[in-house]
Amino acid sequence: MSGQQPEYMVARIQDALATDPRTGELELDVRIAGGRVFLVGAVATAERREAVEQVVREVVPDLEVLNELSVTEDQGPGPAEPVS
Amino acid sequence: MTRIAAVGDLHAGPDSVGTIRSRFDDLSDRADVLLLAGDLTRRGTEEEGRIVAEELGDLGVPVIAVLGNHDHHSGQEARIREQLERAGVRVLEREGVVLDIDGTRLGVAGTKGFGGGFAGASASAFGEDEMKAFVGHTETLAAGLEEALAGLQANRADVRVALTHYAPVDATLAGERLEIFPFLGSYLLAEAIDRAGADVAIHGHAHRGTEKGVTAGGVTVRNVAETVIGHAYKVYRVGDSVGARRRPSGGGSSRSYSSRTTS
Image (tube, rainbow over all chains, first blue to last red; front, side, top):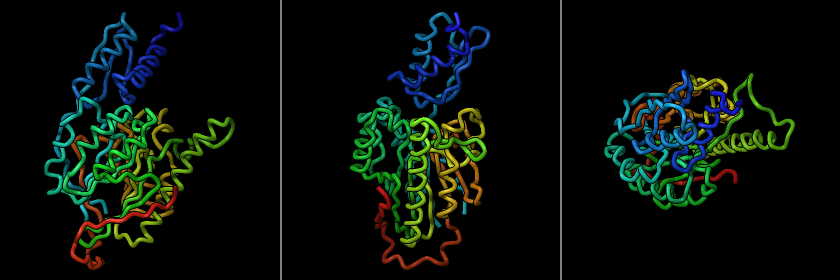
């Protein structure tokens, strides 16, 4: 069935991640390869990392999900840079 | 010389309570002002606005922000703005503010900005009403940014900063997929910045982009999305050459005023 083509599944996952109240994430990289879903990118908290995975599992319950998201920790201030 | 701390895309949510404020613990030792380049919240709810406002209150330096697309998602951007301003965060939308920082007049003009793409691959206000509205929104905000920047000049700002959420150039989008560039920014913002003049342009929004860029007119551009800079914030020293032409500060207070240039 055409709706199950990986290309359409990726779009449905990205729509769900953007609009689901548990996530609201637009900037994550979603790929389906070898029958598995790969999630790459950064989210703000560990809770959101888990929420993203949960939403994806609900959209494509039959696929294995590899959650490779990183969490943006407090990385301290960056170095000062003169710009003008 | 003015030390400008900047970060974008904090994306505060209910799980952010207590996690944002700690990032700015020693901010006042490192910077004179904090600029926030939009997407302060995750879904743009009033609750998230309250949370981020509480996190950002009384940081020890003036805080100036623009809102981003996430802050508009729930249609509660006006409430978010109110909450931030009640906490002392100045929110700019086609507006400028000039701060007196130890005798240097730091001007910041801001707008959310919007998309449309970049020269050679940009949208035009043609065809359906929806397309005209899309491009028209960017045109309106870019024109407002230009007017606000010009207002900084009129208010004798020594240093001028353009603050947006969307990107004014494509150089700082490197790393993002080319196909989504039109949703990440617009050359109209850069054109406005170049016409009005600025020392630096700061934006967020492009999480997978690149920090450093420049407009066609030579204005330094920095993408400060948190995931791009890889830090709680970056500090940019602006106006190293301004000291010689500083005006008397009248006591070096941080008195500020603003000039709303368009509505």
